[in-house]
Image 1 (cartoon, rainbow, N blue to C red):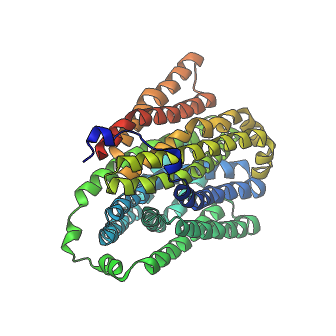
Image 2: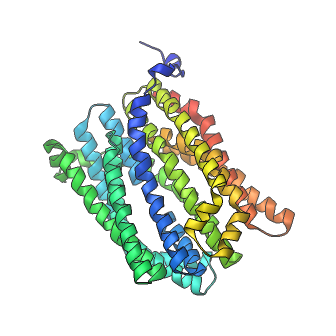
Length: 454
């Protein structure tokens, strides 16, 4: 038998790496992931051409709040991928279906709690993030409408998690494409034709997300085996009573890590309201491009996650290392291409997103930060995928805590003290520093991750 130290070494040959499998999983995932921020960019572009700067800023603020709240629950997607992938890696298809059943039950419970409490939570958050006035009122209306689609989003996350864990990224692509296409149609109708502004953008996204959820459930049900369907429908199975402790530990750490990350993103989106309307709108545009970058990078991260989950199910450190190496270089290439495109095409990108000259001018003042974001941050998304697949969300939380407490907050504080006040430059410098720190700490913890599989 191979001993643990020998198995934990990174011993992979280039020709033996799973390049084709990684590419087969990553390309549909990239297209699927990019479809999500494209819909957000369509929202921004519609408002940028058919509304005022206050609508762009309010939707940017509201979208940041709802994204933070929703993505606190987003652990359902990678959490489902990890447990399904590890079950399938161990040859347990029925166990994979039972994990889907648990995730669906959790999604229903979270949805019920959210729908009961959003009327209290959202106004309280916006009261802290923005001063009283039109911006806050518009953002509140937008956010409450969007909040009604949380059940649809959670169902879609569970389905996507199952398929990625099963090494099928084509179905999530079909669902994301249908959702984004519906969002574009409804945005054009509600914002461009009917002139409903931010409210129209909210209802358009609401409708598209429910259509996407219905399609996701239909496609998953058609692809489950009869035995898996029986398992999903059998709520009296005694085995369903077990496994909740491990699931709770994994998901609670992932939930806390995601809440921290999205809290930072919400701060970046909302702090512009403390400066002026143009800065708020400019930050909203830049954050949409940040989301576009992260979703594009997430394609290969999803592939690494799927491969890593099966390797973890087989207790195979070599397979984990192979998945990491095979996914790293394509992500570097994507990051370089995004940075070059953002910088060289900055005027054209802004022209597509808004025709408000003051907003464009303000965005250009800070454009360098969003241009270098992919290049400086790609490693965080790459390693996130590996850790998620291996089911080590606790280490991810450690990394996020260290990056927030030791980098993000100190950079903000030092910048404010040195210059006498907090500026938008300080905010973006701290945000970039956070992502650099995330990838550095995850890289430092990687040998420990490999040893847990040995």
